[in-house]
Length: 187
Image 1 (tube, helix red, strand yellow):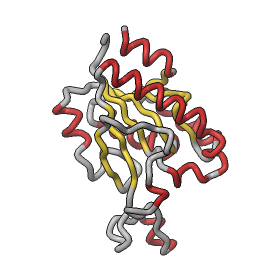
Image 2 (cartoon, helix red, strand yellow; image 1 turned 45 degrees about the horizontal axis):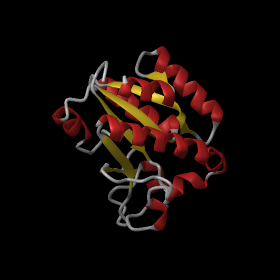
Image 3 (cartoon, rainbow, N blue to C red; image 1 turned 90 degrees about the vertical axis):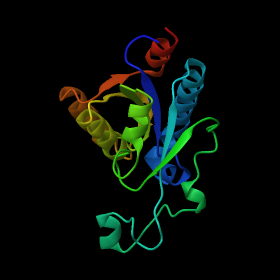
Image 4 (cartoon, rainbow, N blue to C red; image 1 turned 180 degrees about the horizontal axis):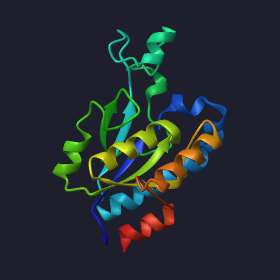
């Protein structure tokens, strides 16, 4: 593999996230892209980290907007927290988070350091929140972030476009396609 050592982060590819109409429409392309990336990562021996969101019913992990609205979601054990059925999770390491960033309150950075990963390749939802915050925190921790354009989606296309422009403009992330990424891994 040429370039920095990579890990694939599959973020919030869970059933409940794809209930929003825009994400439901994007689901086929996002999941197809994530599957292609995962298959290529396995062949290239690139670590795959499956990042999911789950909350406790006792409110201890709720975000401020959940507390303000007195309404939680993505509770441990609920069917909606399951990873999308299309994705084969064999060999993936699962990390649970309770906030937008996959780094916040998890051992993700420790795992990346132990694996000597210098770059995270990201796919999942939602771009303006979990993808963007994870990319920013990767940058803050001197880990390069690559966002795969066909493998991310958002509830609002205008949010996604603005966030991707900002992340690339600020040099906090780069954009790549599935084909480009697989080409880098298979060199």
